[in-house]
Length: 174
Image (cartoon, rainbow, N blue to C red; front, side, top):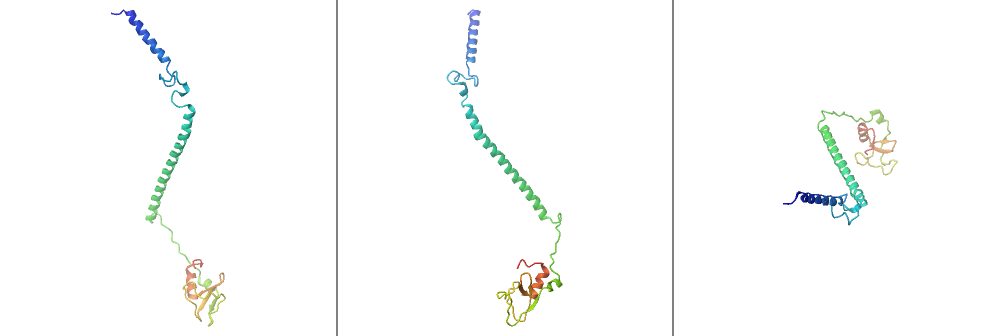
């Protein structure tokens, strides 16, 4: 049997050896391999400048992509909700009744204030190419009643232009 002093000495020696090894460990990662051969700034693999480069090179663009994707998805959700709202209002006019608008043209005295001309046998008009009514697209015949519009100096059949002006105030569609 060993003497108790020797056992205690051995245990103290082992403990001192463990403490010495612990003190010789790398301060950043507590490993045995980088404590003597590699300077402390490289002990965990990458220098600080490379870490900052990775953060700036991958982190910021990644963050921008995440924010952009979030904004895109939220705008699509908002647009879909607005389309649903509009589809409800279009399909049920009883909820939001639309006002009825009547388009009224000119009154008869205003229409008759435009000059009226009876076409002669020669069928000559001030504009030589103005020999077709642009409303009914038929050629003028002798002794037909024509009405001209002073603003544009065009001629039309009286019946055609009177009916057109009773429904519309302008001839912009002609």
